[in-house]
Image (cartoon, rainbow, N blue to C red; front, side, top):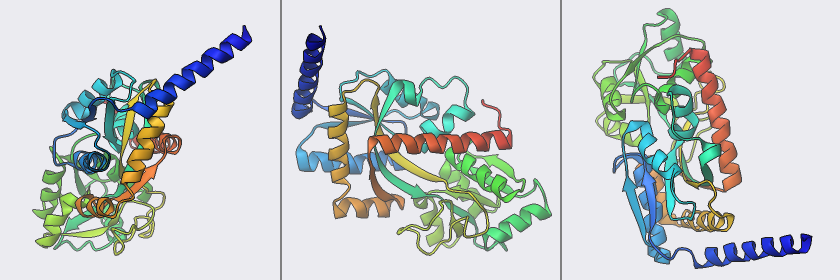
Length: 321
């Protein structure tokens, strides 16, 4: 009986290996929870286009924006676990949304397998170019002088930018006033026009306003400076402890996808990130570093980020919507 069981398992393993070797035999659909042109969409297309260029794989990027990312992520969670449905998601879907929204229709551990972290990018803390605030210390001092009066904008309640801003305030021991906007671009524009004092945003959304000299950067939200942001100090360097918020983008597949296929997707994706033109496009388009983090480590990183944002939600007293 035991020999039969061992033989059966060996046969299954052999079938999975053969399937992975032949994979893919048809087009792969990559679901993106956001509209074309955003950081997740752009990152996805840079990598998938390179895969098609180098290997000839047929990959269809399927943008399903809306519902705080729930639409695309929910579809992917119910996808067949055969390697032909991939979700391209960012920090918000799995590290933030579960703690700020009620009835999230998916769960990382229950519904997905992490495949690869493609990129990681700091966010920028920006103020109006004419503001007297020129450093993190100035921002904290202003908030302490007028508790609850210093305003900050975000792309909306429960966004990763919102939670990163709250994290910064909690770590600094100050109270500030959150003003939600309908997207990252309006939040940065609000700083440029002095509607709010500051915001946190990705480099692509800030760059046009930097070029027109309407805003200035106080620093970045990650624990260390990056190759893309060498001249801007981290919040920790600026005297605000523990803050380490970034926007990563990565691939996930439905739970039950064979390990051999996951490993092949990881290897192929990570290999694409090594090309100089891919690294350059990531840096230019999103101010991001190429990462190539493997499945086990990527899953652990997502869980670590989730615990951090869960604590921020608890410390601030945010009630899930």
